[in-house]
Length: 186
Image 1 (cartoon, rainbow, N blue to C red):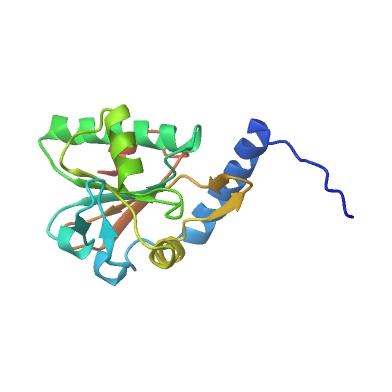
Image 2 (cartoon, rainbow, N blue to C red):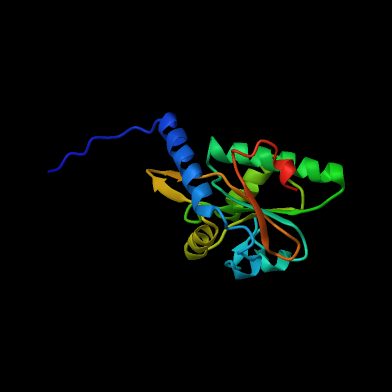
């Protein structure tokens, strides 16, 4: 009989791994802007109300896209707060954008999970879309957009990046934790 020693999860390990992931993703994603269109990404998603949504259907509008994990306690809350500040900056300028948050973990997060997340975080605006898809589509989107992730025990380890697509559906900017003022990317 083989005995396995338990390894306890430490928040500092997650923070360190996330920092490494962010650096790798930003370096790996460098030059991504200008080469990706919403229309070439997977299109079969469900929003937090269970309705179908396609990313190509958002063309004609500026789109702010990121990936998140509903049970994340460090990186995603900071990213969502940054998105809220970005929304406020757009509001102050009288400008609009669609915010798309793609769930990293479709095996454990369904539309109802994201609906609860949206409600508990007071993110009720109609231009915010929390979406889930199949495992395959989620992995493909993450690969195409260079979002790095892996599972560690029951945790999803990931980076923090936000992508801005112009009204033609073309990726125009990417930014992350090193961007001090997200509104400056507008």
